Image (cartoon, rainbow, N blue to C red; front, side, top):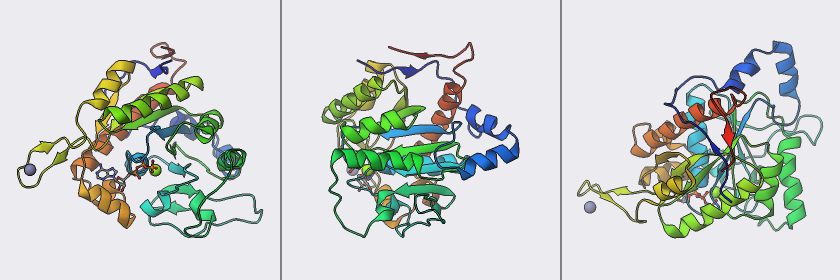
Length: 307
Ligand SMILES: Nc1ncnc2c1ncn2[C@@H]1O[C@H](COP(=O)(O)OP(=O)(O)OP(=O)(O)O)[C@@H](O)[C@H]1O
Ligand SMILES: [Mg+2]
Ligand SMILES: [Zn+2]
């Protein structure tokens, strides 16, 4: 069954606070401060899954660049690496050392990298030890990312989903109180098949689809300056049309994306003029626009609809 979608898209409003952010700031300061010292995700935080179903399509790269693009717009952002079996977020943000555990050992304070809070299972283990956990243990770990982490005041928490549609993804979709999901795909039909499975899983847990980001859409050749479609073309559009969900951006293949990832610097910060960075910022602006609408779900001009 297709998922339900965020209705009536409007032009993006870069820099404007989402409804949840403004309602957080309208609370008495002391209650917000108290809430920010507790573990868990504040109810006003927009929690967004960056998911695909398909492996290696650029979910992690997308989560990091969207996170920093949102942070650059003035929002408080957290990124949760939910890929327990192949955590890679710490590499992309130059942060691999273990994190601080204040007094109570079961309370975890996420480290901040260049203004963005980040947490990953990789921060709790020795380098290169393979993760061989059975389903229930993995599920329990995923839950602890929400119960034991002091996320504090956040406007956006982006969850970098692991590939596939098994226990962890389902547990996440149930426990994370997701505002919505951004689906990442490459243009190929072989990717779309897996993305559709992920959409069906999100529909089971009634998570709205915010939109689709097509990555590795094309490659601009520095010799002939033409666009080459290495992974064919049109996949993202096809999916967007089929499920009537917005296309948020097409991210080109760029060596600078791979380079910045390997060096632990987000593309949007290091090369803001790069085509990929501009496309990620455009996607972030659409997300701001669509999630501020999603939190206005009680208003007459907006509703989530089950399709
Ligand atoms: N637009 C792009 N241009 C060039 N390289 C890219 C682009 N997007 C991602 N990559 C590279 O492709 C590889 C896979 O990207 P990434 O790790 O973000 O994918 P993923 O979907 O998170 O993978 P996994 O399913 O293993 O978690 C990485 O080496 C990354 O640097
Ligand atoms: Mg990944
Ligand atoms: Zn060429």
